[in-house]
Amino acid sequence: MTLLPAASRAMLPAHTAQPPDTGAKKLPLAELAGDALRSVGASVSGDQIGSIIGVAFGCAWGIAGGVSLPSPWRVATIIGSLLISACLVILIGRFEGTATGHFDGATNGTAVAGEVVAIVIAAIALNRTRHSSLIPPAVAAIVGLHFLGLWRATGNFSFVWLAGALCAVGFLAGILPRSARLSVTGIGSAVALWAAAPSTVVRP
Image (cartoon, rainbow, N blue to C red):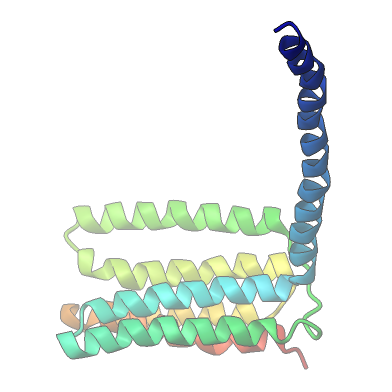
């Protein structure tokens, strides 16, 4: 009867010594995961980051423009926006070897912050003056100006003409009838952003 407790107590140190070993094995895995994430981030250039941001904006604008269309066109526009954006992201990734730009996160962050503040102010002002239909064109122009900050963040001049194109879309949509402003702003902005995406990673 006294041998069983003694044997069980003798086996306890062997079991209690195992948790530190499993904990020691987790540390290299965590380091490998961190190295993998850092390598992925290092492989994406500033031009690619800027292009992906533009494609994301284009997808959002395409969906927004399709919402105001009749039912058959609405579904087609939304699905088309998602497919076009996905294809462009894949295309941008294939230019990994030729994209050599830098990316200044602080400059881009400042531009994004200014963009958000300007959009909020414009939306409040236009709502209070009962010109809410002008909000989409105004937002398109503000987003366009935001790409000037992205140009400064990446050094890629393609973002300058993209800024001009979005401002032009906003202006043209603003002088159209109210019923057409959202769809024209959304689809026009999406086309400009999608067209600019490849040119921002392929430099002459």
